[in-house]
Image (cartoon, rainbow, N blue to C red; front, top):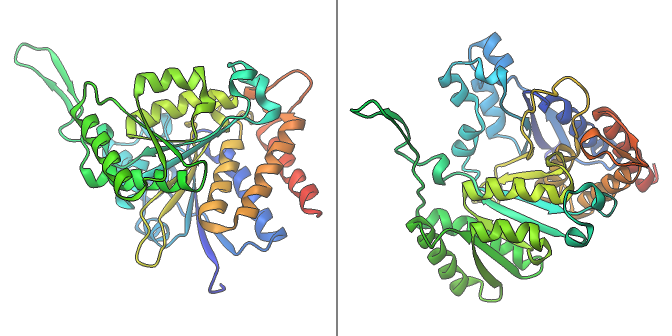
Length: 371
């Protein structure tokens, strides 16, 4: 292996994860073969199949491969296969563990309206045309990780469910810094979303974002929105947004809402990043935003664009160059001009399978690359 070879670990996950990840791997292999991208792909055991054969969903050898990787390509998690494992095994092999263990706190979720897809959205063409934004979701804290949590039985027999929304100032600062830096490389505009009018955690979030803004990013235009207003603005006038930063639960909800700008949740990629270490190296995981969709698993109809574009984020942020990422973006746009999977099907387009969409992207890459 050459000294500059970059290690990519592939974890297909469950449900439709293996189907869409296969297409992303095809794209990775294309870049390695046709563009000389110096990557090596490995497929260590993980998840329910590893649990069935090895007694653990995350063997030590797999965890070590993840620790030494340059990028992780992840498919999807959830569904009956996961539910059938004991709770402890689910937590041992789940995404929450990886995010926590590798401190991948910044989740980047770009949302772009493809010109040929404007009529595939449930929103009007004139509302979404030209949308190109990125949601930065805090991923390692907040209500999904806060303690105490759980369900308890009260003395009178009623149940009480408890989850805790909690952040520290440094957790807010580090994700806000990622968002400010992204904004500085784009339009110079950042929107921070919270619920400071009713939540003390939101008040602290806003104060920390303001403090960092004044100290280091005064050149960036900063705007604050309450999350309910932000949700309304996403469907009223999404073009007003460029970079949005928000907490874990709000980012989860808002990014799924924003997915409909693209026509389908299957279109959205994401990148989860740690802070850079002393050598400037980040832990990085790339996955489509959609879930495991067990109801269509094995049918060959899942949309692989989110997974393919997740590899595009790996190219842009870790593995390749902006030129590689732009080439893939153009190839995806070219493919969407010609073919569609079931979730984004429109009159006048050819309907294709998951693999058929992968074929179309590879063919577009060949055309654009002059292969």
